[in-house]
Image (tube, rainbow over all chains, first blue to last red; front, side, top):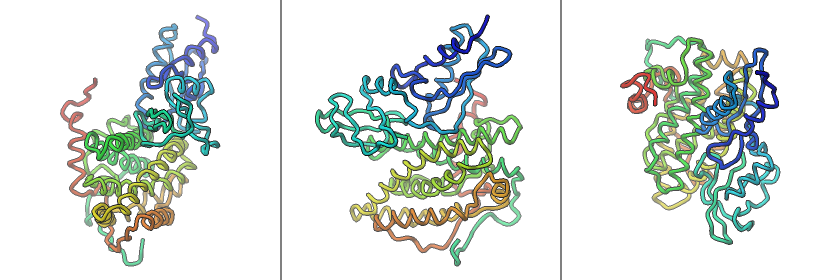
Length: 156
Length: 267
């Protein structure tokens, strides 16, 4: 079988994060590289969002499973820490999907003075309930306009 | 170290663990985070409110993640095939090299937050310094951990101020926690031949150099919280060479129980 890098990248990039609905690892910005070595072995390099993110191992298994399903059996996933992931690495499409699923996307690190918008009514009047939410990457906020509590993908 | 410090450490003649400095250094950093994560995990389902319960679990998870990365790397540096699980679950109490501060029991919520604040205020400058370590894996772990330590510090500082500057009851409890834990903070700034070798190699940071940043943070937060800096000059050390207090063995008994009872169990 002839392995083209493009095909492999397409398979790997479409793997979804287990905790963020429909957001792919490419959109989340944690897919660093895909390489095919001289012998046809595939090396996928990823970086974790948080040091202790329990999704990291699920993501590794999902990448290997996706490759297996596409017929690629010789693959490994490597983890790198540097440069550290930041929420600025989340793509515009990833941000759109988060918001569509009721999770306020992170603000750009240079725009932390902007308000966090309520993902339901778009009000800019929202308050922090807790800096620690349902997963390591989310804070819990509440909208002061429509009264709904919501997750905010906190800036890192 | 202040001039009049009374340092109490391991007894003379205690068998010294003869570990390669790079390995020992990574174990020290990793064990701090592992033991602290285990302590924080004890709060799960017992937090003062739901949000704080989740926060404590999140903190535990961050520290556990840092510990896993450091112990995995330590195992690679050691080169004897030990992975993170072997190092976390199959070493005895005397082989753990964490700060004695990290193993202190949770006590009340003020004790937990005081312990967390002292560690956070230290870890921020530690990770800052190690972000440019000559060991690229350690540098990467530190760069990642630094981002997390900064919001840990924000969280614990907020609680130290809120309790210290709260009611008479909350103030007294926070001051009592600070007074009780103070003697374990000095160990963060004491090094030995391991740190010396790591500084020499450009891998590690001189513990004494971290003190000014830590003192500054503590002074600022204590001023806002209305807390007094203890004048206790007793400094308890020994954790870095495996000489612990009575609490670590109990913590490990619980943490390691499954692996010790059912070795290599997978599920």
